[in-house]
Length: 344
Ligand code: SP5
Ligand code: ZN
Image (cartoon, rainbow, N blue to C red; front, side, top):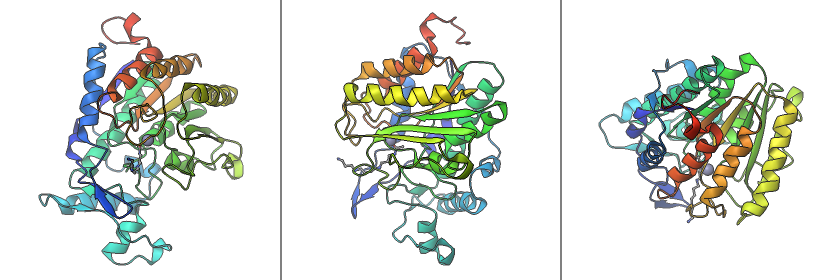
């Protein structure tokens, strides 16, 4: 198990969210990264930093205009302590001329502020995901984890949202697809709408997601069971929504169905978009999974017998997010039985 970190994450400090018009403290905070890293260190994992990603690398999946918006907005905020959060969402994004409308054309919610450090942090997260994919693609390891903060699975081709700016899991999958079909398994409690959107017409990247029913949980507009893909990608997207309050008894059959679909696809690689926000202590997930179940999830993914890249998505209870990630990764990579070098 290789663990690739993003030290630039600390530059991204969201000021607040706006929930139904009311500013509330942010959930997606730098302390999440520190908590996960500390828990992994206590489990004996070794860390490495990702080499820089060229600023144009995300352009394989993201629109150039969107990337320029993130870059230029961050640059304009340097030294100001300010942020950019949309209030207006133009239904015809092409009609957005002024700055206020453009903010909303490049974002789909009021939870995802751009700050001076956002671009550097998002690029660093993407770099960690791409490095993890590179290591697995090259056969240097069969399991790699990217400690990606900010998360990525809600980011679409041209819109941020859900605390996500660059779709780290999708960039990893895109890097791996040259070596054969790739399955993305999304275990975050929120539907990975961005990943689904980016590969919706692609038959060589299967997207499978187990998550809270979007009728009542973010992202609300995506993640329903009848979204199955389009064109040549028809049949290569599977959503398994679960009711609020689901615990182990409800997760087990859904995860089994997800893994059955992944196995039948015969992927050369699997990307897991991992979240700890289905944990019973998570402040926004609404599910009831105990920490021990995350080890069961890791073992179940391991049983696929396919090389795996993991990206970190959500998980907002600072007291348990690290333990969940460590339990999942230890079961996936069997780190305890490996040599102290951390190789393998
Ligand atoms: C990566 C990820 O997990 N993104 C999730 C974004 C969810 N944002 C929803 C914000 C609404 C929070 N309001 C919760 C109130 C419950 N006390
Ligand atoms: Zn989430």
